[in-house]
Length: 487
Image (tube, rainbow, N blue to C red; front, side, top):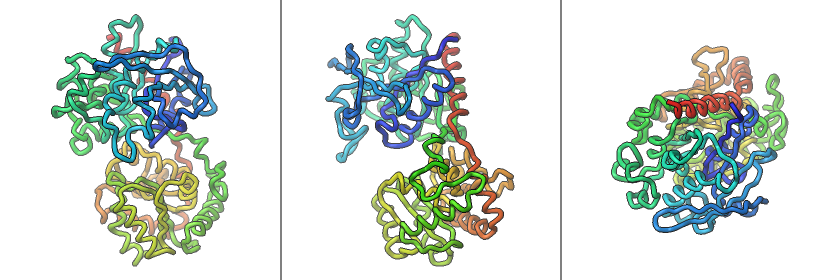
């Protein structure tokens, strides 16, 4: 087989423009695929924040029809990081020249359906401008999901075999709009309805992608199973059960070069995987000093780096912190932002217990790394977690994760209670404050047994989540998608 050509279609790509995990994946996975010999490129809207980047402009723009209007897109490109992987930008000032990807301080953009259709349809037409034809259109989340439908609309006119893959990064975000918005897409009316974009009488962009993609992936094996249930399916479980044979869970990796505790300039002392104790001790003392916590060695320090909203389950911690601070010898370093009531509650704990609790509302990449490096345990009590990257960073930096048994957390953490020689953290089942309290108590017991604690920490640091294994699974998925076209 000749070199396979893959076009990622995404609203964001790190480090050029991102809001979270989706952008991280789109910015990392192509490097691993390229190492395996694939020709991978990315197409993304030319957001306002990307306009300052050095770009090469292609002479032939793209024009597409949406509703009663014709939209023209300039096509430019830049390189992804230090690689020669091309990122193409679709420029249209009326649609994409905004301060934000999906929203601004006033809320979600009201024309997000039109913007999603524009990205998706223009991605299908991109080859006319760049003289390069992908074998696979790999769409990411709801804003790129219509790509799969536009490809199916066009494929009868194509004289080559081409397929689509849709990755669901977080089923909670679906892109829900109106039937009038669907009519502006120019897609056949047959694409509406139960086998298409209609869901509960509304336009659901993600559902349309699920129905039209040749293959579906999500970002961990456990999450792929969970989303076929009513508890985690976010109302789309019937569609996912219908497509179950084409749904594959592939665990996200992390960039182990970017997150390398042996070569991280953000932390005071480098951490060696086989002998981390000296470095961890120095990093913990430095973090305590930076955050104004008591500089004591024999008290476990619990780290949090998270968005503060319902999915992440940090309200469970708030419910048990008074008792922990009163009865237990422990410290907390919290970095995050989100729901005002959670921000204020953590801020209040820090004000009332300044030597035990430090709370930084906002985000600071350097501080995040210092929390991973300086904490003994890392709290991640998510109600659901498609994959989760923070627990992987924490493991790599020797902070033993305490997490709810869900999604990618269940796939990356081997619990101490399993008695496995590879145990690297703690898991708890029920999303309730008491269950979190019980597992924190177990971590306190582990901390008192220094031999068991050091062994668990060493296991954590030996856990590997590089993109190599994921890349092989994606390559197989691409092949299956193309083979499906032969059936």
